Image (cartoon, rainbow, N blue to C red):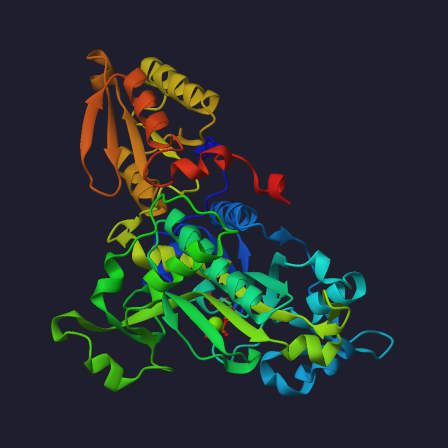
Length: 465
Ligand code: ATP
Ligand code: MG
């Protein structure tokens, strides 16, 4: 993309309505525009990152054997009356009537809708296990929408639902989700710690929330610092392997890590004092096992191997896709702007032309731009007739992890400059070497991704539907 033709409405001033850094930077970098309290338009740069995050979620869901569907945002109240949640849900549910006077609502989650699909089409245990998921807009009329996309009223969520014959199978589905979520967040450059949580209005027995540590997080968290040493890395996982998934769960959840809702001071005391941490965190996901709560209420039964009709065991599993943009920025920024992890960056590399209009500089930039595109990468070329300082400030603000700076002086010596946004370190090299370095950095086997992700890298999520 050439910046002169892009739509990147950056703000010079700090927006006064933004209380936390991610909200401020998303507005300043022209990623979102508020249209009403907690409701946003996604401008090109923000939309691009949202899609990158969504792609990763789809890829990891596909890898775990989960199947994508799309359910409507507008749902009939009758379905929710069957489960009893139409009355129980409260003020967060946006309710309205259609022209025929029928009660409708905007989906805050979709247990009822997916259970309705299941009971219409599945009647035998032979069709199990089954996990259906979607990535879809949700609406919750939050009492205090704030912090930009972090606590919106309209927000984008991955919600998945498992259907299993037995509690044991459903617990495997739970573990499988935990493992796939660990991979998902790591690919986004995030450490999200699974913490024992409270089930809230969805209701359930087993539940973990995934929290990203950040000073601006809304939840108070208590944990053993040993949990922050764990990383999923590029280990191979067979999602059908019950023992292996259970082993990962054990590894990542056996140390003390809880939110304030489930915090147990006595148990916390048992953690060696030097490892006890009290901090704040952002909830970026949650997994639940809730048994037969919805299947019994709504008649989602299958015929078991013995011929008897039994209600299926279910769980639901959510990732806050739009909230993740805020969480990533909270975890990765500096005074000058955002620092995107390579896995989610909107463009792979920025090209800054220090002297637009200089024949040699223009030609070198064009060549870099075309070579990078030919390699399947997305460069953002700042081809505007602007001062170098302004171009650098924009690149730093929008946070591309790498920048190639091209100027007449360097070109006389046959070099351009490659700069890391994270470390600020620059290196001079030939344009050809700079292209090779960028290609290598984004090669699928590199740190931001792993060998096992290789076959799926660079593909659009549409492939996985
Ligand atoms: P919270 O406790 O933050 O209100 P929740 O526990 O009610 O969230 P879930 O039902 O678990 O939310 O939804 C799954 C995920 O969706 C959450 O982990 C969170 O990342 C995201 N999410 C929930 N509410 C919002 C919101 N208002 N704005 C943006 N993301 C949200
Ligand atoms: Mg939650």
